[in-house]
Length: 270
Image (cartoon, rainbow, N blue to C red):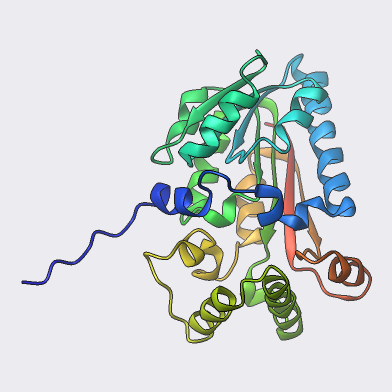
């Protein structure tokens, strides 16, 4: 008798990819590029200040905070932040990092439902998160219900919907990623992942495929998200830009290459 191994849960895959000692900055170097980082930090401060001006406070729910790279900026802007994280080692890191900060609450998101524990909030922030979630539209729809009138929603660092992108955009993006992998000394992993994806084969037990879930379902549909947010918020802005891991290719891409990535900034919940 052959026993088929159980498919790992998304939490287990996240913990394999983001386990003890994982360096979020090294794994997501595109967020360190000053143009992307400065724009994102500026948006976070604008979000918090705008909500405080309207509501007198800003309770933020930050999904998938990693090691709290942007949590500090939300707190510095004047927000009270509840962060969720699916990787238990990352949760322990966050709890240690913010243990003396009364403005940060850490929730261990074992099954993707921890966000509801935050209750009503003034804003939701998802930085490099939505492309990891299989049903991201359903998740955002539920999150909208938690945002009180006058509140906001912000997402960033998600890949544009592949079917609307040009072949040039896709080739430049994939080749830039592959060159970065080579520079990280991960030739074998990079080649294996690239060959699987070229054949349209995805391994449900492999964190390289399932954690980066956008490769399974062709990116993230920014227009579908905009249509979902538009009835609930008075203003919804889609920000498209080039983003890659290599600093050299980032600088060139910002001037010459088509956009690969987007963020959403929805303001003033109806």
